[in-house]
Amino acid sequence: MRSRQIHSFYECVVSRYNGGVLFRIRQFEKADFDTLWRIDQACFDPQLAYSRPELAFYMRRLGSFTLVADADEAPGNGGAPSAISGRNISGFIVAETRRKSGHIITIDVVAEARRAGVGSALLRAAEDQLLRAGAVTVALETPVNNDAAIRFYKQKGYFVEKTVPGYYSGQLDALLMAKDLARPAVG
Ligand SMILES: CC(C)(COP(=O)(O)OP(=O)(O)OC[C@H]1O[C@@H](n2cnc3c(N)ncnc32)[C@H](O)[C@@H]1OP(=O)(O)O)[C@@H](O)C(=O)NCCC(=O)NCCS
Image (cartoon, rainbow, N blue to C red; front, side, top):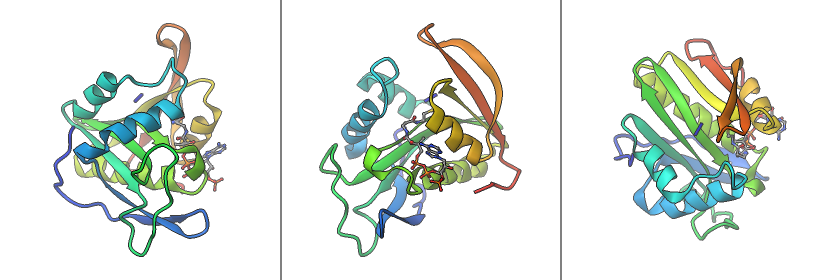
């Protein structure tokens, strides 16, 4: 699982969560990096969380892009303060294209914003960008014990291709999950 992106276009998916707070999906900006790293630290066990250099490496890899769910930038929204940092970022996704296949590197939503559609909006925006880049399938790895993520991805039309023994530091197995982007999304 789990580029610095120049604003080639502006994502404008606006959604609602927690009784009316709005957020906008936008491209990553350099100033977001520290916040994203802190969110990743909070989302994952130390065994799985990225170091700063690891996160920077994946975000800068050729063909990769990062999208951010930003509560500050939504129209008419005062912004729900993040417990993790001053920036009102509810979550982010890092993805990459490898010719005709896309790869989700990570998706992280802050705990207080979960089950409110932020992950869905991030994944949908990333899949759209992958499609525009020519991807026809998308794949990802997730720990076999990450029930929330597995349910989330299944709900989004991903299916389990195989188990990869010891994928995480030789200690934890991963499920390799994939989706055909040509097929209409379930939700
Ligand atoms: C997985 C994750 C990204 C989901 O983000 P989210 O914003 O909570 O997802 P959504 O609100 O868009 O959920 C969409 C659907 O996915 C399913 N889902 C999401 N979280 C779930 C959970 N904890 N249990 C069961 N189903 C879940 C549900 O069907 C949900 O729809 P519903 O709320 O109407 O029932 C989020 O839980 C997260 O960041 N977890 C920690 C980091 C992580 O594990 N990332 C995945 C790495 S591989």
